[in-house]
Amino acid sequence: MKMNVEIEIDWLEEDSTIDQVMQEEITSAVVSRISTQCLNRVEERARKAIDDAISGAIVSATKLIEDRAIAHAEQWLTQEVAITDKWGDVVETGSIMDIIKQSYDNTLNKPVDAEGRFITPSSYSRGTPLINYLVSDKVKNAVSERVKDVSRQIDEAIKREIDTGIKENVASKFAEMVVSTAHSQQKSLPGKK
Image (cartoon, rainbow, N blue to C red):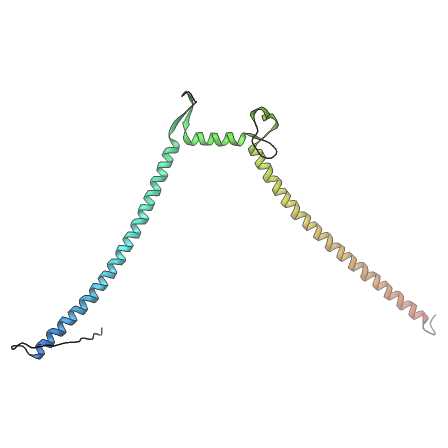
């Protein structure tokens, strides 16, 4: 460790020497400097320890809150309730989860028209359950996409075959023409019959 110390001596007492004053001033400056450095290090370490402790506490608190919220939601969903009509008579009892499931099932089984809109009870016989509509719509879209892919592949294969056939046919006709031309030129040469 390197340390620079400045000493200012304004006056000397009668019974002290310059060496004593310098020694006291140097000791005081060194102690002050070391104390400051130690204090800074302790403060830095304390700040880091506090930050780590706060971060850990936040994580623990968040986990605790999430766990309690989930437990509360599960307790609430399994709680028995009674559904009443407009006069207060109990129509149905069960847990909130069972009622949600039943409502979901009822919604999926409600009839819809060809556009997927719910229809009135008087025209239920003409409707399709929502679940069937959703599934058939997804199947139609999936089949349509697949047919487009297959159709594109077939078109490309036909085009390649046509291109290949035309090239082979042109090459064959060209070869016949060259051979025919060569035969006719060979016959026209003098001395060949």
